[in-house]
Length: 368
Image (tube, rainbow, N blue to C red; front, side, top):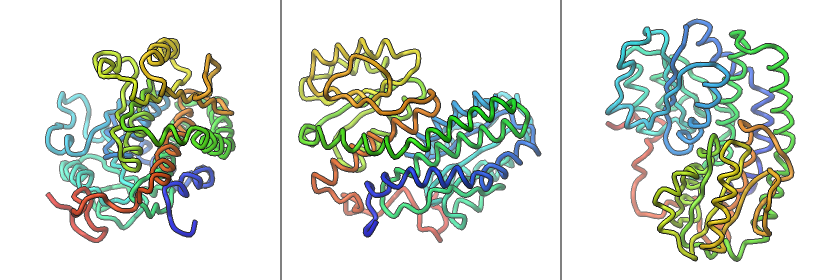
């Protein structure tokens, strides 16, 4: 990559994910150590933007593999409104508060972790920069192995964070004997297969965009909907398109979209649907038929067999519900990156003449 671009980092994801997996001991061992030393029963995950969206995915991993209660919090809400252990159910060493910040400079996340640290809770941070301001409030500092993303939009940072959270849950569950050896090895092999297929996912996503480029570039208003664990994929996709293509693009949980927002639909609306192998799949097929009566701009992203049309993307690989997040995030990242590139938008430039109010300098104290 001569000049860093969002698209370049998307194409680098297969390598970055394999590297993350290969060096998992670096970040899994210190995380598992927290659970060995303390009887953790509740985890708060704090993060803004992409980190928040990855945390929504991580909640499922932690709940299913570790059997702990998990709460995902927007950092400012945590700082201003959340009283940790409000019902007094847990002891001090049974709660862990984890902040996720790729750059370590998110002002809201720094302030949230500072509150947790000063109140005496167990705190940890996942960040790419081990010398960033947020690290001063973490009792355990863990490196996010995504590498630097020298653009304003995080893509491989998202998928590497999701992978890290999965490996945290998987390796910690094994370390605590909450997962039998056979089950652990089966999940590990399944994950390795997913990572090996990532180049094909990137390639098919690019081909899908190129095939429908002219139509996609005409979008003025869009919606993306998902369900189950891939509701978070939809939320992350809306963030990516907003950051890059800079068109109104909203995310919904599929069923909730039909409780009012559907009445605002018209024939100019673009609808992207994530069809994952979860309980709501049949409902998604029903809704797809309805959407096609309203607008011709309906695109499904899936690896499932179905009555798919010419505009839909049938990915060449299939995997489990939990790991499908890694597959389904890529086509929407490609849509965001290439639609902005092809419409002449420089995603490295903030579109307003204003200072960045969300982050502090890497060597700067956080603001209140």
